Image (cartoon, rainbow, N blue to C red):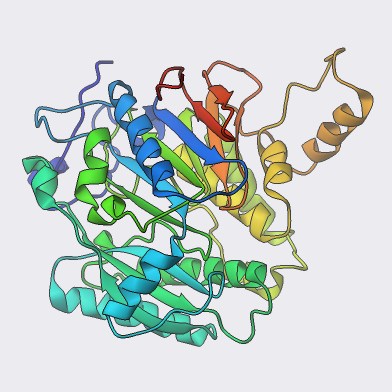
Amino acid sequence: MTNHTFYGAANGNSSHHQEPGPQGLYHPDHEHDACGLGFVANMKNQKSHAIIEKGLRILSNLEHRGAVGADPKAGDGAGILIQTPHEFMANAAASLGFALPALGHYCVAPVFLPKDEAARAHLQAMLNEVVAAEGQTVLGWRDVPVDQSVLGWSVVETEPHMAQIFIGRGAGCATESAFELKLFVIRRVVELRMKSEKPTGHEFFYIPSMSSRTIIYKGLLLADTLGEYYLDLKDQSMVTALAMVHQRFSTNTFPTWRLAHPFRMICHNGEINTLRGNVNWMAARQATMKSEVIGADLDRLWPLIPKGQSDSASFDNALELLVRGGYSLAHAMMILIPEAWAGNPLMDDNRRAFYEYHAALMEPWDGPAGVAFTDGRQIGATLDRNGLRPARYIVTTDDEVILSSEVGVLPIP
């Protein structure tokens, strides 16, 4: 299959920007991708704008990992995940007339919305309503400045309006982890409400991230235009200690704004070939799954994995549930993507026992896949047990770790 990409939509509806349903020889279950991923992080949590610049440079150097269509400015999608830049966001909020509390006591969530003002206002009101109903405070909204000139002609019609909602931590969330869980619930409640009520413009609605720790900038962009499109990324006061980036290459698939990576906790290179079984098993667990951490809110999250998502988006949903339910990030990743433990004489008994125990709880999400993951505090990467996707990393003398799907993404002396 050649690397042709498709923009607009089937059936001649160019304003439609969702994935089409099965037709002819095409079926969405057969979609695949092979992408470029990377991250750079300061291991001592020293935040700087240079980390963002390095992340964007990694992304630009992964340009060959993506595809370009007949429109030379149209790609399969690119994005960056960083820690919440408090000083930048505080200044942005102040310019709009509201103040932010301390870092960890608020969330900045990017939101894709329709261009139509009336439809946009209605969707914003719906989100405000859910936030208030869950005991949190809407501090304000911000329109995100973008440079539309970097978009290809085939992408402009599908471009959402870019906004950010600022959510203050309610009194009922005693800890940052409780706030993260509540934000997870808010996002799922809103997503399910959009799906059931289908208000005007709902097909544009998407929340790339909703966390007090991280924020995502992504879209149907080329690798080297992400930093040009989002003007925020040029501001020197925007700092982070980690940056996770991704360039998507979808073969035999239909790129959209929402399917660009990173997702909320991961970016992914390869395929989850066991996806159908993984999704079915996750759905089957609904009747038996309980969580002391999530409590009664667990029943409000289903279906956990929305139909029609990509394999990596589905994996991200499963990881998010485990982490919000109390597992550490590394523990959850080892449950979902275990090593090849059965019949491995080189593995010690305790480690084999760990994997054997968790095999009874969760089937492996098998690739070939390379996955980078973060919760805004830790960042890491893993290969699935087939080991057929590359990933290389180096640690520098000035306490940075750089990982990518290939070597040479940054010039390091």
